[in-house]
Length: 268
Image (tube, rainbow, N blue to C red):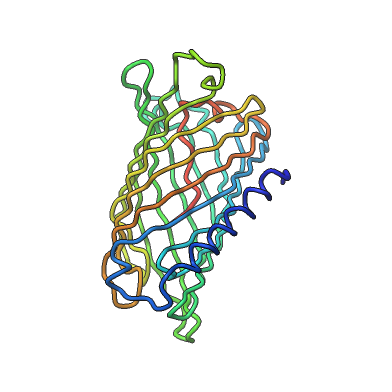
């Protein structure tokens, strides 16, 4: 990874430490019901062939008040649909298979470890010329284990996400040339609930910038409605600042267009 990423990561961790130093020493569920979170993730692509690629994400998440820190590493394999001219599958752009590990470091409870498998597909619906509605449908299998010797718990979750990227067309200033605005909304439907993080809805407006070397940076301000964030708290309203970094890597067909919807990384 380039030095710029490690400098950015060290800065984020230092800021997180300062925030926690001013946070409450004890956790009260009433405080957790409306909370602040910070997420950062680094995404690295690897092109296998014209129709196959894999993207790996390394991510960190934290919450104020100090309830948990979360670390995750998830890889997703993408298979481009080469039969888009066929009537049945013409709208489907690609298929995804993936999996990864998620470790949650809790402050007032036992830590939690999760193995996650996922499969889904992406399809686009063109509307007016500058905007394409990008859709992502995914099924997740979640296997969680708390470090209190209670064994493994399984859960199944269906997710649907709708989004678009709006490019900045009027380049009056040179630095605006790579500017774009990603907009996303995601809905979660639990088929079999796990003990933690049974999400209902996520709204994610953001701003992105693409460099000439194809590296991209996106900053989102997210509202997230979550179930079961602690053992006794049923629901919470989460206000999240999320920074996403994409390695330019080798271009895969159609994947670096600013109007292309980025495939999900498997996060909560």
